Length: 78
Ligand code: SF4
Image (cartoon, rainbow, N blue to C red; front, side):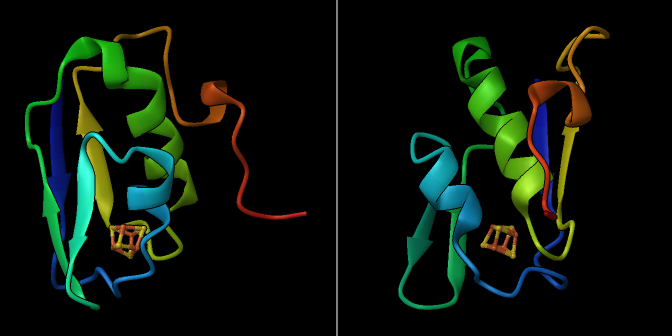
C-alpha cells in the first residue's frame, strides 16, 4: 500500500492524524509527516483518513480491490 499526500493541498486539519496516528502526524500546527508505505494492517485506518480529509489531499494506492474509501464506511457529510 502506498500513501501520497498532496502537501500543496493539505491545510493541516489533522483529521488524518486523528484517524490513523500510526501513519500521519502533525509536526507543529501545519506541517504533516506521514509514512508513505504503511504496513497493511493500517489499511482501514488509512482509508478512513483518506475519506475524512476535507480537501481530499490523500491518495491511497494498492489497498486492495475490495477496499475503497466508500467501502470503509466513512462519510464526510451528514
Ligand atoms: S486531513 Fe487532509 S488536510 Fe488535514 S492534515 Fe491530513 S492530509 Fe492535511
